[in-house]
Amino acid sequence: MPEQPPHRELVRRDLAAEAQRIRLGDLVREHASPLFVLDPARVTDQLAEIRRELPGVGIHFATKSLPHPAVIDAVHAFGASFEVASRGEIDLLERRGVPIAGCLHTHPVKTVADITSAYLRGIRTFVVDSPSEIGKFAGLPCGEVGVLVRLSFPNPGAKSDLSSKFGVAPEHAAALVERCLAARLPVRGFTFHVGSQTTSAEPWQRAIAATLQLMRDLESRHGIRFELLDLGGGFPVPYDEPVPSLAELARGIRPALAAVPPHVRVVVEPGRFVSAPAMMLVTRVIGTNDRPDGRWHYLDDGLYGAYSNIPAEDVHALVFAAAELGVQRIGDDAADRVTRRVLTRTRVPVTLAGPTCDSVDVIARGLPLPPLADGDLLVSPMMGAYTWATATGFNGIAPTPVLVLPAPRDA
Ligand SMILES: Cc1ncc(COP(=O)(O)O)c(C=O)c1O
Image (cartoon, rainbow, N blue to C red; front, top):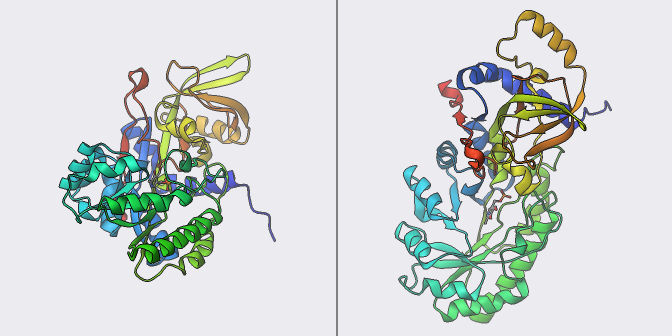
């Protein structure tokens, strides 16, 4: 069997084809850099893959991962719903005409004002993971609102093990459910998050089995019926290394779901899997220096901006010189292009730093790239999740603009 090219080369080929298709060079010439390029069609593709691989499972897109109007519109047009965690996210969905009643409010810790505001705008399902949260629902009309109990299933293998901050341990969940029932707050079911960027089906299998057992025990003990099992997010995307496909993970998850009783609806809350592939980032070299530890290139975006996913999540999107993708630099003449073609075969280890004054603002060290000069462009794919959403305005640097590609039929 012929040997597979390395992951970076496979990604480079796809990205080069995409850059040609969307005329990336022209877009950057027109809109300057840094620039996010958002393709809503990729959102639809990812949602369709979830629907195909997890048939019958409801989708609530995790708004926090990329709360951009074009993404909200694509998710809504596909027919999926949303997971929200704040008033600001509900505001955004309302402005885009999303029916709020179908959304899940998943933040386990809220103020009474948050709950009241969400209720008044249509939210009917909230999440709790502690006794102190239960009393906050006391003023709402009895029976109209219900909760999901958030369970914690530790997963040290995940990039972000969300169980350390939220969720009640399964062995303490029965007591919490009983306190909800005593307060006449209906418990609609359970939710968990096995951790972001989870690369095996096993954490879902374990969590599903344990939750179904808990549901059976509580249903028979209290004569109640749960209606919802929420598997959370966590589906991975390939950054600097390959990950199992959703098809492969779903092959492991589907058998675990076979034990779900017919009166229980199953939903997922994917964030990264839907939003990450939808955006690429274009940056430019704005300065170069040969320092004692080698060559440094300073870019017009960094850790306090679009690459905020590096410190927050320890994920590392690949970085390509535009020349590797066949995207020419502005002002290149024919002679430059010939030189560049030769240079793209050479690799020099460089440090890439962001534009702020902070010395932690370093995107990558020792990264082998073709020789770069000031003005050259760099491109990172897979930059839609927890990037634009988590960027700061540190040093007074403006947020990186998002250019939304037209839908293929409008192109
Ligand atoms: C409650 C909840 N649901 C869904 C998600 C989305 O997770 P992911 O992006 O890993 O799919 C998150 C992420 O933090 C979350 O907190």
